[in-house]
Amino acid sequence: MTRLWPTNSGTDLNNEVAYLFFNIKNKFSHNLANYTNFFLYIDLLNIRSKQVLFESFLDELEILILDIVELNLSPENIKALNYKIVCDLIKKSKKRFLESLVDTKSILKKYAPLNLFMEDNYLSLIISEYKIIFQKLLIYIVFGSSAIQDSSLGFTYASTPSSYVAILLETSLIQLSNLVLYLVLDSCTSLLQISAFLNEYKLCNPCYLSIRSLAYFKNVLTYQNLIYLYIDYPKSIYNSRYRVLLISSHGIIAKYIYSSRFEDMINLSTGQFFTILFIEIQDLIIPKLEEILLILGKIILYIFINLCSNSFILIIKIITSRLYTQEKNK
Image 1 (tube, helix red, strand yellow):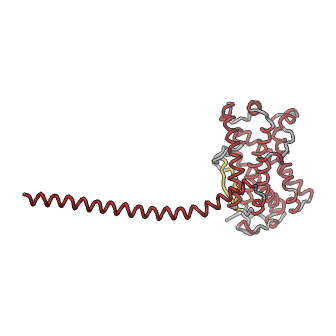
Image 2 (cartoon, one colour):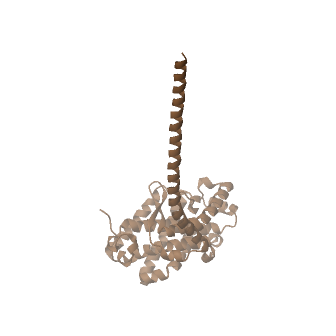
Image 3 (cartoon, one colour):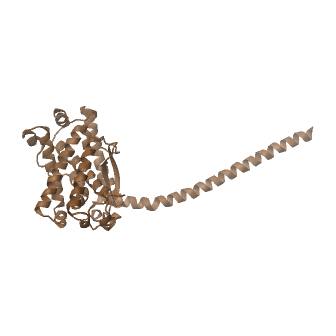
C-alpha cells in the first residue's frame, strides 16, 4: 500500500516529517559515492565529510522550518521569498559546515566570505532551477499536500505519495549541499589552496589527493557546467522534467521526474533557445530522414538481390551451356 502524505498540518503531518528526516539520516550510512554519469563538487569529499556536509544542511533546514512556523508564513509568503530563503539556507549551511571542521573563527574569515549569488552564472542557474522543488518541499512539510494545487503532477493533492516528498528532500539536500561546497571552494584562488584546504581538514577523497587530479576534476566540471547551461538545462525544460539526485543503497544516482516548466521557458536566453530550436528541427527532420533511408535501403536491397539472383542464373546458364557443348562434341 502506498504511503500518502498528510493533507493538512497537525499531528499526522508532524509524525510524517519526523519519519522523513529520520529515514534520510539513516541513508547517510549508505554508500555516498557518485554513481551518476556526471561530476559533482561533493565528489572531492570523502564519505565522512559528505555525511558532515549533509548533516549541516539538514540541521539548518530544520531550523528554517521552525522559523517558518514561528513567523506564521503562508504558502504565498514562501513563494514570494523563495529565492532569498534558498540563498540564506545555503549561506547558513556553509557556515555550519565550516564551523564543524574546527572551533575557530579564522576559517570563517578565510573560506566564508559573502559570495555575490547573482553574479555567478552557475550558482544562480542551479538555484533558479531547484528553488521550485525546494519551495514545494517546504510547503509540503509545513502545510501538507492540500496547499499544493498542481494538476501537472499526475496525482491529486489528497493522493500525494510520501515517496514523492522524500524525492524532493533528497534532491534538495544533494543539490544545495553541492552548491555549499562549490561556494567554499570558490573562495580558494588556486588549486594549491583547494588541495591545502581539503587535506588540512582531512576532507579529501583519496582519488583527488594530487594537484593533477584536482586540475582534471576542475576542467571537467567547467566543461560540464557549460554543457548543462546551454544543452541539458533547456532540454530538461523543453521535456518538462527535472533531474533529481537520490541516495540509493549503491550510492548517489540520478533520475527524472515530470513537472510543467512553462515559466522557466520564458526566462531562457537566446543561446538556450537555439538548443530548443535544434531539438525541434531534429524532431522534424530525423523521422523523415529515417523514413527516406528505410525506403532507400529497401530499394538498394531489392536491386542487390535482383542482381545477385540474375547473376547466379546467368552463371548457371553459362555452365550448363558449356557442359552441353562439351557433351555434344564427344
